[in-house]
Image (tube, rainbow, N blue to C red):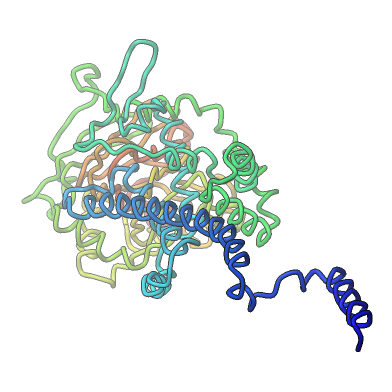
Length: 494
């Protein structure tokens, strides 16, 4: 091939290479020319920039993890840390449901976190669900609402009500525990994932590099994709549509007093006494009786159980606790306006329950054996646990209470199995008084007049537990079997 032919062939090859972008650089040829090596400095500088951002991100992540570790460790090392403080209880659920998830599933984490992930996955099914986090957040909002807590103070860990220039301390924790900005954000968007998604997207407009918010967007999008009906459900979250909503101000006012037993020197018709009810069972150990109210008739029996009995009853019930329900027509459903878990204990479970029935029967003079009374219901209230205004007796002929075929609930005998630091009072709405939680005491009232008609003045509520672990045991006594123990009357006034 002559020089002219070789030149033509070379031009043809160059023309082909010019049309093929993959031929612009041959990686295997870089070392063969210093100029090619020099050109490689530019991509390395870009890699150095990426590596620098990665290292800074890792350093920040490790600092955050160290702070998280130190914070949680300090809580566990403090044996007096009370989960009865709703702020601590909320942040515990938030950590286990959200913060630990972000630690374990961090996108920046390296392979050395694999063991932690494996360990986390083994216990994941035992951790609070997303619904628990929502519920805990709504509970804090409920406490702020009912007790008119100062929001800024609550975020700092202070339980205060501020009205004008007056500041009322509702509870003074031994150790202040404040909420982070993320905690407050979680509470503010409680129960509304679609709103949270919208707010998170808006947040990213101002801080597009915020990785936590980016992960939140992905999480909320996934939740809405998995449950499209959630958007509709969120739009209708509200208080129950019952005719007692006009009592809302009275209910909240009574709760805010944290329990307002009348003083006997102000109302002479109220009195205290040692009660035996002419029962041989109580002659050697009468019960201290305090008449709280006359219409409706409400009495408080002090020290009805002792500490060991209360602890035993709580222990018997704890393995069987399930979400409390309310009657809705012929069904029983869990609702937002009753937040607690409950368990039913037959008297065959333990001899203590038989003794308890004998004591209740001797004190009230009523037949408390099934089917004339229900089994003992033990209730444990959760974070901000409450039961909005309701009647214990049935107000509709379709009520599930009548399935027992023993009539309506004529009386309620409620035992306080624990104390609380604040809140949790039993408020009688129309009678306009509330009874605080008195550990080991029992509250008794008649739900029906002697005529068999329901006593409207027994509308009552369990105020939200502000701080503490509230346990009660209910014994509901029915009409049948009491005919000669509490004779009926022809007058609806009796």
